[in-house]
Image (cartoon, rainbow, N blue to C red; front, side, top):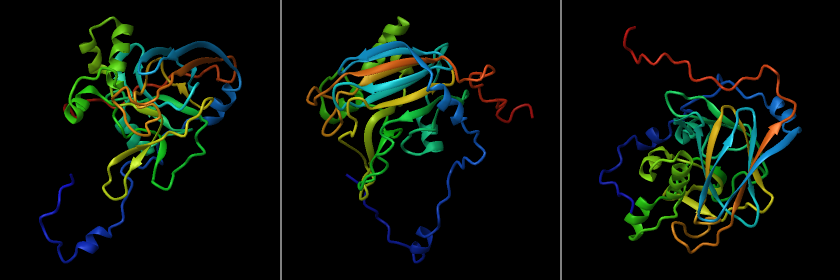
Length: 288
């Protein structure tokens, strides 16, 4: 239910609404990725790893800095919820909110995936997206969003009652707990807002609510990223399948996803270095 205003409009309401918006975070001075380097390197790839993520489950995987990773649709339309951590320190992790603020609500080729404060550096760069043709549909929907947080058992308990243990939050928590050999209750503190790979989403035009619709992904489609630092990834196959109707249950038809890791055999400059941490001093106004 949406809140209904209790106050009448002031005389200058139209004037206030007519003020033109400005971009919160202009990116004119943001260092851009060297797409020519990535384009050359991705033509010389040797596959070094492959992971299958079964339906309603999650797996972790490692992508060394300077390697490429593909998330691939293999059997049918399936959405994946992606977490990224610094492989050496999982306190550094993907920052969905700042990635959204810098790139927009949905990401594709050329966009960078940023890490949380105080590290705030590019963790990965999207180098290829077979769904880049989709753009925006008549409902305002797009693919690969950084809006939604991930389906989770806590929200499901509030909205639907009962226990469901195969939401993406739980799947990622189990996968990280297994990877790090820690309690699942400790692991879930490191699970974070995701990149919704292949998910088609937007906001309704009347109530501005987050919506989902059937993903346009088909077998053979993939999203490819380049690791700017050593990455530990976690990918959950969403229990919503293609997210056309429902999630957080065993109702939807679900399919596996495949993760492929590639090492470029040439194309990267010999002096290429992983992304450096944000140089802000962190004194926050003290000791000026």
